[in-house]
Image 1 (spheres, rainbow, N blue to C red):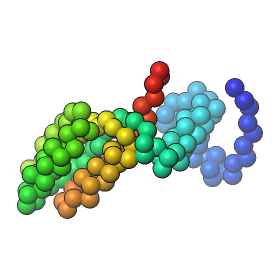
Image 2 (cartoon, rainbow, N blue to C red):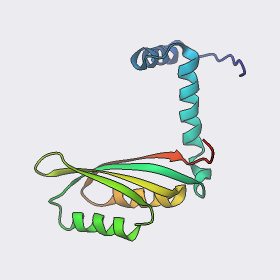
Image 3 (cartoon, one colour):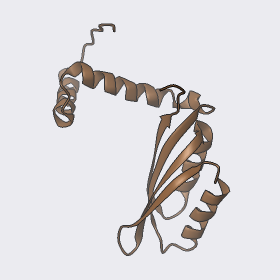
Image 4 (tube, rainbow, N blue to C red):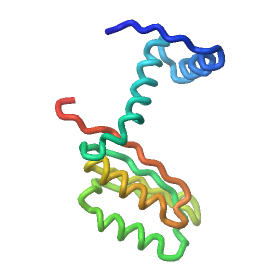
Length: 136
């Protein structure tokens, strides 16, 4: 392990200390390691298009929207090679939540997720990507 000295302004340090307290980190170093990993993961996304990954696509939508359920189902069938599993939840009379576990290359997974999230009447969507590394 290497020791690194970082200078942070008071406002940023206050935010870091707030996160440390909320998440229950034992010390600042543990928090910084997690935040650096998260930042590096985001920064490396563009180069990961060909790398295999697993991902969770989470989105809500208005199930009464014309043909949306059919379009979403068709999209999943058209990309059946990426889809591992799905969970469908009725949140209220009009709103459904879906969680789709995906597996494939980063580029294919992101392209599919962006297509689903861009559908009209999909209200919220987020993709969480985890690189698949051999031996980990």
